[in-house]
Amino acid sequence: MTVLQCSGCSASFALYPPRYKCEKCGGLLGYTYDFERLKEIEFTGPITFWKFKPLLPEVRSTVTMGEGGTPLHKAGRLAKKIGLNVVYLKDETRNPTNSFRDRSAALMVSNALDLKYGTVICASNGNMGASLAAYCAKSGLNCHVIVPEAVDMGKLAQMLIYDAVIEEHGEIVDETNKRAESLTKETGWYQATAEFNPLVIEAQKTIAYEVAEQFGVPDWFVVSMGSGGTIYSIWKGFKELQALGNVDALPRMVGVQASGCASIVEAHLKNESKPVAIPKPSTHALGILVGNPLNGRWALQAIKESGGVATTVLDSEIFTAEQEIARLEGIFAEPASSAAIAALKKLVSQGVIAEEDKVVCLITGSGLKATDVLQALAKKRKTAVVGLELSTKEKILRILSQKDVYGYDLWKKFGKTMTRAAIYQHLNNLSKRGLVVSYKKEGRKYFKVTKRGKRVLHAADELKLLL
Image (cartoon, rainbow, N blue to C red; front, side, top):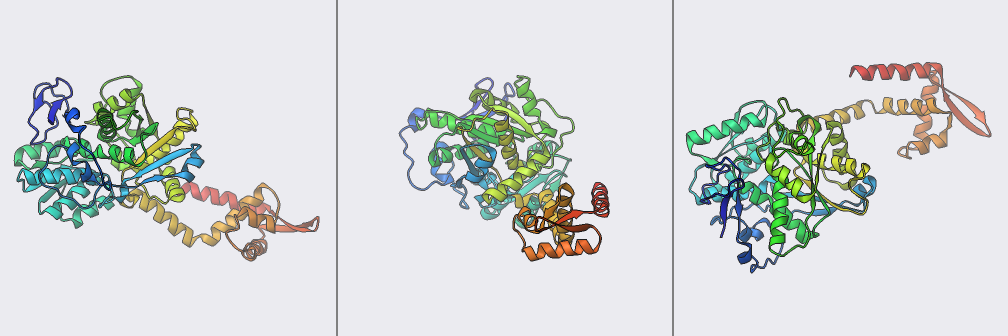
């Protein structure tokens, strides 16, 4: 038997339509199950989202685009760089619309069809809106997405191409959520906002089910937090597996937030049971840009129950981690999930996570959706193309400003990424301009930077300060 139950007063409600708040005490509602009965069920065959249908609230319709069954990559090169033996990346970018929200969209749209709704509404700053728009398009439902001013253009483009009706309201998703809640009361549309529909938690818990089948139970599971629902989903999934007798241990959960909007982390550090409101939250990782996390209580519960930790990372650390994941493991992760890798590096350096610990990090969505990152990379690429020759000469001057070097050694310092002939050509050009001079020593031709060359480097530094 499945029950929609209040986490505060334990009051029970009808399964459908889904609702998130207890009418009696205002507590959060979630689905509970009769695990003794479910122990009799055996799961066989390939891993897909709908494989776990018996462990989800009952739906008659099954809308699918091939969601779930995403890879669990062993990140050997990344692990070595961080200083760990075992790191796995649960790659949710491999879902149909390139994010973990496809799991939730599949379950909610199936439920909306069961209940004979014609229009689905959600507030979203990106992935959920894109996912719902796609699944509604497949199912013939109307999709109304309310977005804040701060939204990734790549995700907005997905909503538009799937023919969703887009409404902009508020600066960040906190304000957008309020608009979606009031509009649902006015129109009677199906409420599919992640924070307002408990089916989202149920759909996302299947990530834990899959990891358990693919690997087992890690020592640590690292998850970025916006509203807090995702980390709780995964914790709930592992606890249910334990109740079913499928696993013996549970992971310690790591919740990560950007330093500019760390309401859940602040509450955890102060040992409080609800998030600390952030009046003006800020981060370039728009997927986790939330000031008042509506599922924050559940996130705090997951961290505390698991004996886990909560930590913050800077935007600069997030962007660095994003590049490292791509360069070392070939996965282009969105900033929101790259924060998990940035936090992992931090916790290893602090000695919180040990070298022998086994870690899984959740990669929630694709970096191709993130506008800021694409713009930064495009700018970097343009600069590289336009100023390649200049940057090479600048690198040579900087190397020579440290100590005199002969040609072959200079070539090695460049990592042998260009021919020795090209290196000598740059040296000759610099010499003609009076920026370097050469001299003989022990049978080798050494090069040294001149005073004029040092002035050029100083001017370059001054110019960069203006950019």
